[in-house]
Length: 226
Image (cartoon, rainbow, N blue to C red; front, side, top):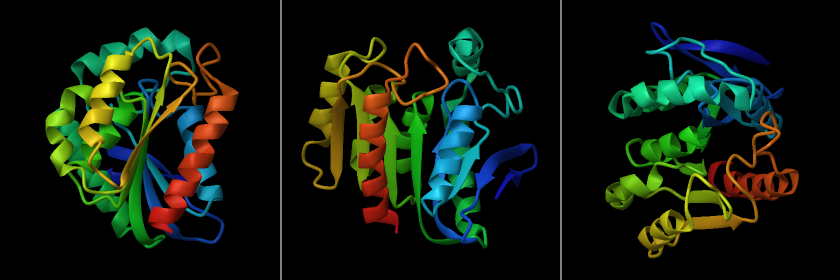
C-alpha cells in the first residue's frame, strides 16, 4: 500500500506500508534526483520487509516534487543542492521522523536510511533527532560534519565505495577515525564507486555491491528496529 503523506502544509512524502498494515518505521532520504523510481523502489522494498517507509520531499521549499530519472538529471539536482538550507533540512528531517512515529501504521522503533545527499541527511538526522538506527550510504558531506560525532548515539551503519570519485579515501578515513570508539557504529567499505546502489543510474550502479550492502542493511535494521 502506497500513498503520498502530508507531513505539514506544502511538505509531503511518499509512504509505503507493508501488507500486514504496520511495522517499525524507516525514513528514507533521497538522492539529488528527488523521490524518483529508485527511491520509491527502496520504500517499496522496505515495506516488503515489514517496515513503514516514508521518503520526505527534501527539495519541497525549492521545487516541490522535483524528480529526475538518471544521470542526465545531475545538473538540475546539483543546482538545488547548492540552494539547500541544511539547517531547515534538519528541521524537516525531525518533522518527518515525528510524523512517521505518529502514524497509526507505525508500531515501534523508527530508523533512517539515505543515499548520497540523503546519506548526509541521514547522518544529520541521526545526530539531531531520536531515531533508533541509521544507515547513511555514501554521504559526501559527512566528513565536514564530524563535529557532530559526539551526538551520534544510535546504532549506525555507514556504507562507502572504495572507488568513489566524489568521496576520497581520506574523507572515509576521517569518518572511520571519528567513529572508532563507538561500539555500535560500523563503517562498511565496498569495492565500488559512488551511488552504487542506484539502479536508475546505469553508469554508477553496481549490482554486486548493491546486493552486498542491502543484505548488511537488512540484517542491521532487523537487529535494531524489529
